[in-house]
Length: 112
Image (cartoon, rainbow, N blue to C red; front, top):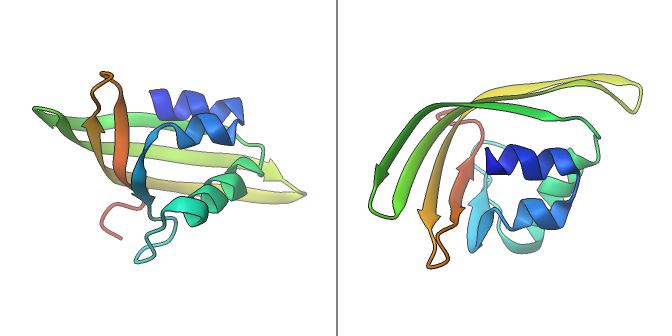
């Protein structure tokens, strides 16, 4: 999975390239973020220094649009505290003219 590889590299720029320019992430249910807010949310998680594990449960594709249902978790010890984040994402991606898939909507907590 491209996102997990980018995330696990620790490189926020690589993670940012997994999104369309105006793509959103929803770090907390009901709080979509794009631009600098999206970057800050990603950098916060990267700052934990913990890997993400992700497994695609379903991928529904029509043309250049995909709905992805992904089980994910970030677990370990960061800054002296136990971390246990997990969920089932409901994500929308679009294939660009370059053939690469990028998030339009990255909703890590799915229907929460």
